[in-house]
Length: 222
Length: 254
Image (cartoon, rainbow over all chains, first blue to last red; front, top):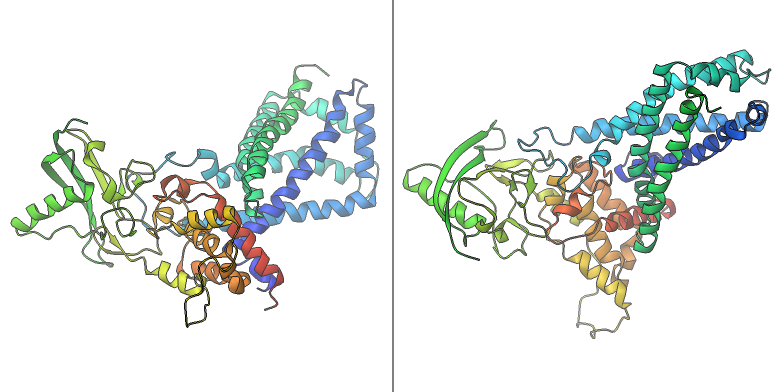
């Protein structure tokens, strides 16, 4: 097999989706961990220190390019797969199979991914774009991101959009987490059971931590 | 269970040939015994149609004991009907009650074109098998049984995978029309046994390449295939296929 077949064969594409998906899952852990510093009860000092580290290091900036590549490949490959798969049954059924055998969220990864994508654009335009442009896109001085969050999350619609974004992410992860491991070849039942449980826990905990951030600001808990 | 008879309304997909547009026809069927099989009910209807000088409904069937993989009807939104781990021929009319309406469609997938009515062309599966679903053996005298040691759990898993009858229900159920459960059953069956070792690294690659060529979709692990498989092939075999594929893809030079 040539390397190009990773992007052309059906199983190769699955591998790419799984590997980029798992990479993005590790990003979620880092992102949630750093942002959790807002709850340090110190007026955002710890959070801004962490944000400063992420915004002022060449190493992180290079990794950021890798992160963008991960997002882009996952989004493009996912969209291509969704469109191609839909075309494999030109004439559909009169009576749909529905939930007889599969869950709605496992069949809706394209839709959930699109919702997450829309959220991502809004989210980047709120924090990443203003902060980077303030820095002159390189390693200049950052905005006070804690204050930015505080202001942003006063608006009701912003909080609602963020919570809905986290909700989409949770359902995307419930299927995606365990599916990624199946795709990279974990067929041992002992591990599949473990990964299933870990996947559900991850899909609840991480999006919940994210969702609590705008909610905490909005309700004045911090 | 008490025997009873029922009157039913059947909505059956009729299509003259591959190029015909096709459409549903409604047939009332009367005095159907609860002890008939679903296909016997179709036999009764077809005899009626023949008596009336009409074209009988074409459908695939052969052994009628759940092991050949020929019968293929999508009944009320589920391949092989409502029962778990079951083929259409083994579905019995006691699953229905008087007055029910039953919608019967052929397998739907670009790779399974309709030949006529409820019959679809599943020769794509044959070509996938030809691409890699075989082992090489020397001709001559048969080897002694058990001459090659095989671990019991592997033998059991290979046997469970070998139970696949190639009916195509997995494709019919999959939202992507993917044949991955079929492939994974065949690959698992051979990859788990020492006899399958010589072709192991190219088998999954060649079979997947043929699957893609035939126009089946890609797997997204929804599990619909596993739920309708008459032989209860586990979706875990798909994970093994993914691994077998990469084992070959990452190490074979060309």
